[in-house]
Image 1: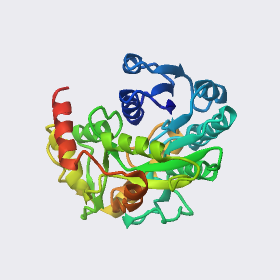
Image 2 (image 1 turned 45 degrees about the horizontal axis):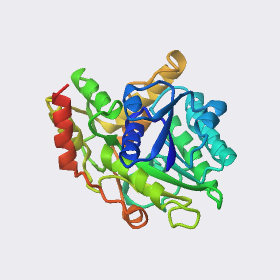
Image 3 (image 1 turned 90 degrees about the vertical axis):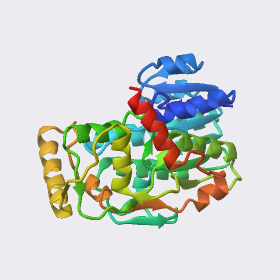
Length: 329
Protein backbone atom coordinates (compact mmCIF):
# COMPACT_ATOMS: atom_id res chain seq x y z
CA UNK A 1 0.00 0.00 0.00
CA UNK A 2 0.93 3.66 -0.25
CA UNK A 3 1.07 4.94 3.30
CA UNK A 4 1.55 8.35 4.88
CA UNK A 5 2.89 8.33 8.44
CA UNK A 6 2.53 11.66 10.21
CA UNK A 7 5.26 12.03 12.79
CA UNK A 8 7.29 9.46 10.87
CA UNK A 9 10.50 10.69 12.49
CA UNK A 10 9.30 10.05 16.04
CA UNK A 11 9.76 6.99 18.23
CA UNK A 12 6.54 5.20 17.28
CA UNK A 13 6.39 6.71 13.80
CA UNK A 14 9.80 5.31 12.85
CA UNK A 15 8.87 1.87 14.16
CA UNK A 16 5.74 1.85 12.00
CA UNK A 17 7.71 3.09 8.99
CA UNK A 18 10.33 0.36 9.41
CA UNK A 19 7.68 -2.34 9.45
CA UNK A 20 5.88 -0.95 6.42
CA UNK A 21 9.09 -0.74 4.41
CA UNK A 22 10.20 -4.22 5.53
CA UNK A 23 7.14 -5.74 3.93
CA UNK A 24 7.44 -3.68 0.76
CA UNK A 25 4.90 -0.90 1.26
CA UNK A 26 5.63 2.55 -0.14
CA UNK A 27 5.86 5.14 2.61
CA UNK A 28 5.81 8.91 2.91
CA UNK A 29 6.42 10.80 6.13
CA UNK A 30 5.31 14.22 7.32
CA UNK A 31 7.48 15.72 10.06
CA UNK A 32 9.02 19.05 10.96
CA UNK A 33 12.56 17.75 10.44
CA UNK A 34 14.38 15.49 8.01
CA UNK A 35 15.75 12.14 9.23
CA UNK A 36 18.70 10.27 7.73
CA UNK A 37 17.27 6.94 8.88
CA UNK A 38 14.11 7.53 6.82
CA UNK A 39 16.23 8.47 3.80
CA UNK A 40 18.06 5.17 4.16
CA UNK A 41 14.74 3.33 4.22
CA UNK A 42 13.62 4.94 0.99
CA UNK A 43 10.89 7.03 2.59
CA UNK A 44 9.59 10.13 0.81
CA UNK A 45 9.98 12.85 3.40
CA UNK A 46 7.74 15.91 3.53
CA UNK A 47 8.81 18.62 5.93
CA UNK A 48 5.98 20.56 7.50
CA UNK A 49 3.77 21.21 10.50
CA UNK A 50 0.77 18.97 11.10
CA UNK A 51 -1.22 22.13 11.84
CA UNK A 52 -0.52 23.42 8.31
CA UNK A 53 -3.38 22.16 6.14
CA UNK A 54 -1.46 22.77 2.90
CA UNK A 55 1.52 20.72 4.11
CA UNK A 56 -0.72 17.85 5.19
CA UNK A 57 -2.66 17.82 1.92
CA UNK A 58 0.59 17.85 -0.09
CA UNK A 59 2.04 14.93 1.89
CA UNK A 60 -1.12 12.85 1.42
CA UNK A 61 -1.06 12.89 -2.41
CA UNK A 62 -1.26 9.37 -3.92
CA UNK A 63 -1.68 7.68 -0.52
CA UNK A 64 -4.37 5.13 0.23
CA UNK A 65 -3.89 4.98 4.01
CA UNK A 66 -2.74 7.40 6.71
CA UNK A 67 -1.18 6.50 10.05
CA UNK A 68 -1.74 9.67 12.06
CA UNK A 69 0.90 9.41 14.78
CA UNK A 70 2.07 13.03 15.09
CA UNK A 71 1.01 14.79 18.28
CA UNK A 72 2.16 17.15 20.99
CA UNK A 73 2.67 15.13 24.16
CA UNK A 74 3.46 16.41 27.62
CA UNK A 75 2.03 17.38 30.97
CA UNK A 76 2.46 21.15 30.93
CA UNK A 77 2.59 24.16 28.68
CA UNK A 78 -0.07 26.21 26.94
CA UNK A 79 -3.41 24.66 26.01
CA UNK A 80 -3.41 26.37 22.63
CA UNK A 81 -0.19 24.61 21.63
CA UNK A 82 -1.74 21.21 22.34
CA UNK A 83 -4.95 22.19 20.57
CA UNK A 84 -3.05 23.35 17.50
CA UNK A 85 -1.09 20.12 17.16
CA UNK A 86 -3.61 17.55 18.35
CA UNK A 87 -6.98 18.96 17.29
CA UNK A 88 -6.20 21.21 14.33
CA UNK A 89 -3.64 18.69 13.10
CA UNK A 90 -6.23 15.91 13.17
CA UNK A 91 -8.78 18.11 11.40
CA UNK A 92 -6.19 18.63 8.66
CA UNK A 93 -5.55 14.90 8.34
CA UNK A 94 -9.27 14.16 8.04
CA UNK A 95 -9.64 16.92 5.46
CA UNK A 96 -6.73 15.55 3.42
CA UNK A 97 -8.21 12.04 3.53
CA UNK A 98 -11.53 13.33 2.21
CA UNK A 99 -9.92 15.55 -0.42
CA UNK A 100 -7.73 12.78 -1.83
CA UNK A 101 -10.24 9.96 -1.42
CA UNK A 102 -8.03 8.09 1.07
CA UNK A 103 -10.02 5.14 2.34
CA UNK A 104 -8.32 4.27 5.65
CA UNK A 105 -7.07 6.20 8.68
CA UNK A 106 -5.31 4.66 11.69
CA UNK A 107 -5.13 7.18 14.54
CA UNK A 108 -2.73 6.93 17.49
CA UNK A 109 -4.66 7.93 20.59
CA UNK A 110 -3.94 7.34 24.29
CA UNK A 111 -5.64 5.63 27.26
CA UNK A 112 -5.46 9.00 29.01
CA UNK A 113 -8.46 10.13 26.94
CA UNK A 114 -10.68 8.14 29.31
CA UNK A 115 -8.71 8.71 32.53
CA UNK A 116 -10.88 10.39 35.19
CA UNK A 117 -8.35 10.37 38.02
CA UNK A 118 -9.45 7.00 39.41
CA UNK A 119 -8.09 3.48 39.01
CA UNK A 120 -8.39 1.93 35.55
CA UNK A 121 -8.06 -1.69 36.62
CA UNK A 122 -8.86 -4.13 33.84
CA UNK A 123 -11.20 -1.70 32.07
CA UNK A 124 -12.33 -2.24 28.49
CA UNK A 125 -13.30 0.19 25.73
CA UNK A 126 -16.78 0.72 27.17
CA UNK A 127 -15.34 3.08 29.81
CA UNK A 128 -16.70 6.58 29.01
CA UNK A 129 -14.85 9.82 28.41
CA UNK A 130 -14.63 11.86 31.63
CA UNK A 131 -16.37 15.20 32.05
CA UNK A 132 -13.17 16.90 33.22
CA UNK A 133 -9.46 16.72 32.39
CA UNK A 134 -6.53 17.99 34.46
CA UNK A 135 -4.14 18.38 31.52
CA UNK A 136 -4.28 19.68 27.98
CA UNK A 137 -2.75 16.57 26.40
CA UNK A 138 -5.50 14.06 27.28
CA UNK A 139 -8.19 16.68 26.73
CA UNK A 140 -7.08 17.52 23.19
CA UNK A 141 -6.34 13.88 22.34
CA UNK A 142 -9.89 13.00 23.42
CA UNK A 143 -11.33 15.69 21.16
CA UNK A 144 -9.25 14.36 18.28
CA UNK A 145 -10.14 10.72 18.94
CA UNK A 146 -13.84 11.50 18.92
CA UNK A 147 -13.43 13.40 15.66
CA UNK A 148 -11.68 10.44 14.07
CA UNK A 149 -14.26 7.91 15.20
CA UNK A 150 -17.18 10.11 14.16
CA UNK A 151 -15.58 10.48 10.72
CA UNK A 152 -15.87 6.73 10.06
CA UNK A 153 -18.08 6.13 7.03
CA UNK A 154 -18.30 4.13 3.81
CA UNK A 155 -15.74 6.40 2.12
CA UNK A 156 -13.28 6.62 5.02
CA UNK A 157 -12.80 3.79 7.52
CA UNK A 158 -11.19 4.96 10.75
CA UNK A 159 -9.81 3.28 13.87
CA UNK A 160 -8.12 4.64 17.02
CA UNK A 161 -5.45 2.80 19.00
CA UNK A 162 -4.65 3.63 22.62
CA UNK A 163 -1.12 2.35 23.36
CA UNK A 164 -0.09 2.85 26.98
CA UNK A 165 3.40 4.00 28.00
CA UNK A 166 5.38 3.04 24.90
CA UNK A 167 9.01 2.25 25.70
CA UNK A 168 12.04 0.43 24.34
CA UNK A 169 15.35 1.04 22.57
CA UNK A 170 15.35 4.35 20.74
CA UNK A 171 12.84 5.95 23.12
CA UNK A 172 13.39 9.71 23.14
CA UNK A 173 10.60 10.63 25.57
CA UNK A 174 9.59 8.36 28.46
CA UNK A 175 12.86 6.56 29.26
CA UNK A 176 15.08 9.69 29.03
CA UNK A 177 12.72 11.59 31.37
CA UNK A 178 12.79 8.82 33.96
CA UNK A 179 16.57 8.48 33.81
CA UNK A 180 17.20 12.23 33.92
CA UNK A 181 15.03 12.67 37.01
CA UNK A 182 16.65 9.72 38.74
CA UNK A 183 20.18 10.96 38.00
CA UNK A 184 19.25 14.41 39.28
CA UNK A 185 17.84 12.93 42.50
CA UNK A 186 14.36 14.24 41.65
CA UNK A 187 12.50 10.95 41.30
CA UNK A 188 10.27 10.04 44.25
CA UNK A 189 7.59 7.49 44.90
CA UNK A 190 4.25 9.12 45.56
CA UNK A 191 2.33 7.59 48.43
CA UNK A 192 2.97 4.19 49.96
CA UNK A 193 1.09 1.98 47.49
CA UNK A 194 2.40 0.86 44.09
CA UNK A 195 -0.62 0.29 41.86
CA UNK A 196 -0.60 -2.11 38.94
CA UNK A 197 0.13 -0.59 35.54
CA UNK A 198 0.64 -1.95 32.07
CA UNK A 199 2.82 -0.58 29.29
CA UNK A 200 3.73 -1.54 25.74
CA UNK A 201 7.04 -2.36 24.14
CA UNK A 202 7.68 -0.36 20.98
CA UNK A 203 7.64 -3.33 18.58
CA UNK A 204 4.28 -4.49 19.92
CA UNK A 205 2.80 -1.00 19.57
CA UNK A 206 3.96 -0.78 15.96
CA UNK A 207 2.66 -4.27 15.17
CA UNK A 208 -0.78 -3.27 16.48
CA UNK A 209 -0.90 -0.36 14.04
CA UNK A 210 -0.20 -2.57 11.04
CA UNK A 211 -2.67 -5.20 12.24
CA UNK A 212 -5.34 -2.51 12.57
CA UNK A 213 -4.54 -1.17 9.10
CA UNK A 214 -4.74 -4.61 7.49
CA UNK A 215 -8.14 -5.31 9.04
CA UNK A 216 -9.60 -1.86 8.51
CA UNK A 217 -12.44 -1.55 5.99
CA UNK A 218 -15.83 0.18 6.03
CA UNK A 219 -17.68 -3.04 6.87
CA UNK A 220 -15.08 -4.59 9.22
CA UNK A 221 -15.54 -4.91 13.01
CA UNK A 222 -12.55 -2.57 13.43
CA UNK A 223 -14.07 0.48 11.73
CA UNK A 224 -15.16 3.33 13.97
CA UNK A 225 -13.74 1.79 17.15
CA UNK A 226 -11.00 2.47 19.69
CA UNK A 227 -8.71 -0.20 21.16
CA UNK A 228 -6.45 -0.36 24.20
CA UNK A 229 -2.96 -1.64 23.35
CA UNK A 230 -0.51 -2.87 26.00
CA UNK A 231 1.66 -5.80 27.05
CA UNK A 232 -1.10 -7.57 28.92
CA UNK A 233 1.40 -7.93 31.80
CA UNK A 234 0.44 -5.47 34.56
CA UNK A 235 3.01 -5.07 37.33
CA UNK A 236 3.43 -2.60 40.22
CA UNK A 237 4.39 0.82 38.87
CA UNK A 238 7.58 1.25 40.86
CA UNK A 239 8.72 -2.27 40.00
CA UNK A 240 8.65 -1.27 36.34
CA UNK A 241 10.39 2.05 36.96
CA UNK A 242 13.09 0.38 39.03
CA UNK A 243 13.62 -2.27 36.35
CA UNK A 244 14.15 0.54 33.84
CA UNK A 245 16.62 2.21 36.21
CA UNK A 246 18.42 -1.10 36.70
CA UNK A 247 18.73 -1.42 32.92
CA UNK A 248 20.65 1.87 32.96
CA UNK A 249 22.74 0.94 35.99
CA UNK A 250 20.95 3.37 38.32
CA UNK A 251 19.95 2.58 41.90
CA UNK A 252 16.23 1.96 42.53
CA UNK A 253 13.95 4.66 43.89
CA UNK A 254 13.19 4.12 47.57
CA UNK A 255 12.34 7.60 48.86
CA UNK A 256 8.74 8.75 48.77
CA UNK A 257 6.48 11.73 49.45
CA UNK A 258 2.87 11.62 50.71
CA UNK A 259 0.24 11.61 47.97
CA UNK A 260 -1.56 14.62 49.42
CA UNK A 261 1.63 16.65 49.40
CA UNK A 262 2.31 15.64 45.78
CA UNK A 263 -1.15 16.79 44.66
CA UNK A 264 -0.74 20.12 46.46
CA UNK A 265 2.74 20.63 45.04
CA UNK A 266 1.47 19.79 41.55
CA UNK A 267 -1.20 22.47 41.82
CA UNK A 268 1.29 25.06 43.04
CA UNK A 269 3.76 24.26 40.26
CA UNK A 270 0.98 24.52 37.66
CA UNK A 271 0.04 28.01 38.88
CA UNK A 272 3.64 29.23 39.01
CA UNK A 273 4.49 27.92 35.55
CA UNK A 274 1.25 29.22 34.04
CA UNK A 275 2.23 32.73 35.16
CA UNK A 276 6.00 32.79 34.73
CA UNK A 277 6.91 29.96 32.32
CA UNK A 278 3.77 29.17 30.30
CA UNK A 279 5.64 27.26 27.58
CA UNK A 280 7.53 25.00 30.01
CA UNK A 281 6.55 21.80 31.80
CA UNK A 282 6.39 21.96 35.63
CA UNK A 283 8.43 19.37 37.55
CA UNK A 284 5.14 17.96 38.89
CA UNK A 285 1.45 18.41 38.06
CA UNK A 286 -1.81 17.10 39.51
CA UNK A 287 -2.25 14.94 36.40
CA UNK A 288 1.14 13.28 36.88
CA UNK A 289 0.49 12.79 40.60
CA UNK A 290 -2.78 11.02 39.85
CA UNK A 291 -1.19 8.93 37.10
CA UNK A 292 1.47 7.75 39.57
CA UNK A 293 -1.04 6.81 42.28
CA UNK A 294 -3.70 4.97 40.26
CA UNK A 295 -3.91 1.66 38.44
CA UNK A 296 -3.65 1.60 34.64
CA UNK A 297 -4.17 -1.79 33.05
CA UNK A 298 -6.65 -2.91 30.46
CA UNK A 299 -8.79 -5.71 29.09
CA UNK A 300 -7.22 -6.50 25.69
CA UNK A 301 -10.00 -8.85 24.58
CA UNK A 302 -11.26 -6.52 21.86
CA UNK A 303 -7.80 -5.96 20.35
CA UNK A 304 -7.08 -9.69 20.42
CA UNK A 305 -10.43 -10.51 18.82
CA UNK A 306 -10.69 -7.78 16.18
CA UNK A 307 -7.04 -6.96 15.40
CA UNK A 308 -5.44 -10.33 16.04
CA UNK A 309 -3.20 -8.47 18.49
CA UNK A 310 -0.88 -10.50 20.69
CA UNK A 311 2.33 -8.97 22.09
CA UNK A 312 5.25 -10.79 20.48
CA UNK A 313 7.88 -9.26 22.75
CA UNK A 314 7.34 -10.02 26.42
CA UNK A 315 8.03 -7.53 29.19
CA UNK A 316 11.10 -9.53 30.23
CA UNK A 317 12.53 -9.69 26.72
CA UNK A 318 11.82 -6.01 26.18
CA UNK A 319 13.72 -5.11 29.34
CA UNK A 320 16.65 -7.25 28.23
CA UNK A 321 16.73 -5.42 24.90
CA UNK A 322 16.47 -2.07 26.69
CA UNK A 323 19.40 -2.99 28.94
CA UNK A 324 21.61 -3.82 25.96
CA UNK A 325 20.67 -0.57 24.23
CA UNK A 326 21.17 1.66 27.27
CA UNK A 327 24.51 0.13 28.21
CA UNK A 328 25.82 0.40 24.66
CA UNK A 329 25.30 4.15 24.56
